[in-house]
Amino acid sequence: MKLSKKAYEAELARLQIELVKMQEWIVHKGLKVVVIFEGRDAAGKGGAIKRITESLNPRTCRVVALPKPTEKERTQWYFQRYITHLPSAGEMVLFDRSWYNRAGVERVMGFCTDEEYWEFMRSVPEFENQLIRSGIILIKYWFSVSDDEQEDRFQARINDPTKQWKLSPMDLEARSKWVEYSKAKDIMFQYTDTESSPWYVIDSDIKKNARINCISHLLSVIDYKEIEHKKLELPKRQENTGYIRPPIDSQTYVEDVAGKLAEDDGMKDGSKKSKKKKKKKSKNEEASE
Image (tube, rainbow, N blue to C red; front, side, top):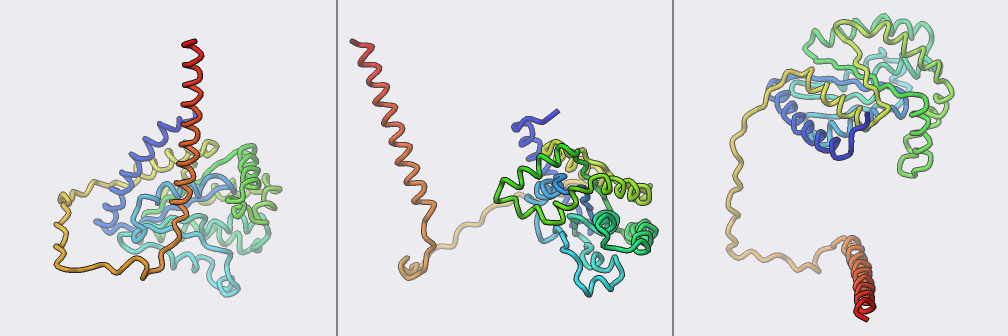
């Protein structure tokens, strides 16, 4: 059942306050947190990441969304380009797609050899166990979207100029390989959904529900406590003992486009109100006759 807008916004606001508390705890305790977001194109990963990060301090919470590997990176150990983005103490890193590219897009689109693919499948559980043993808290989310819902979201992106950048030629080609991606995901889970590093599946057909479910779960898997702070008090403003600001015309100000729009809008609003008053007056006059 879909959350109402009012219920969604109220719960999101509450959860974002808890996320701030969690981040402060991560910094206080020097924790190292990695959260992986995987799923089909248009599954809602980016929207969930945005709601998680928008209230957090970007100095200790960052998003990693790597482009395709360079020629040099293709010659490196596969995990090498990801290792440089792992967190230091007191940091949380959110991977918008991760090393699991090899199990998904690279496998389906033929960007890796069979040997490279199966080596990855053998290596990744050991790699993740090494991360966990090193003290990293590793959380993996798979956003699951239905065929029909993905189609609707693709159509919405095609018709919205602000979202067309989300549809790359690769995304469009991947759309025709729905079954192959399903098979690849099933094999990936078979090898990498382990007791020490499980996949948590988010039903993402309803975006707002998916965001609330994801954030709620994230908060539940990190055992955090609220850090008590001293009550903040603003200091008194420094007394002006003769400082004079330079004249406005000595600086280059940006044109007040918003002010002009507000003025135009106010004139339109005033015109509408004037017309309503005239209509009301006319009706009252007719009634009095």
